Length: 143
Image 1 (cartoon, rainbow, N blue to C red):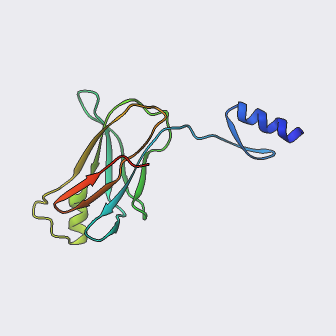
Image 2 (cartoon, one colour):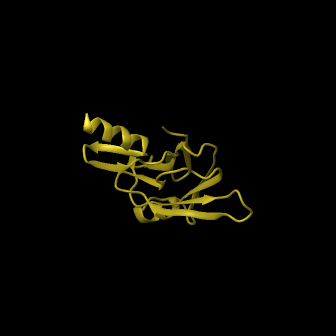
Image 3 (cartoon, rainbow, N blue to C red):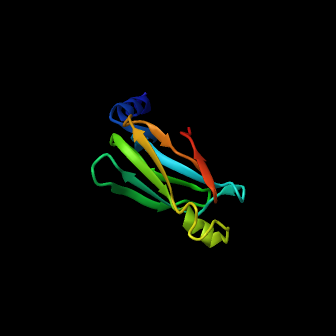
């Protein structure tokens, strides 16, 4: 019974109980992430630079600049609440093509790919995948 009371107090107090006597802070909802996939090579892309800009104001403000991990994924905002507004992801695909020796034109037809989207829910999950090749790309709101 003592452990049940501690667990109940931990949950009410905003903590997630791991086991009796151990607790950790619960993650706030709301995140922005991506996965990058190379359609030419047929797989995910590691080390591609991705930038996230908040573009609601007159002057864009860079929120994050990161490189994709070994699995092609990256979290740009790990936990919310998310600031509402207009955002732009910038994927540096031209640099990737040059490093991989993939013919994409010189200068590259696509140097970077911008994807604009809106955050309308501070607790929302915004996963924005990119599938690209030297002459085009596609995206969607992932899950």
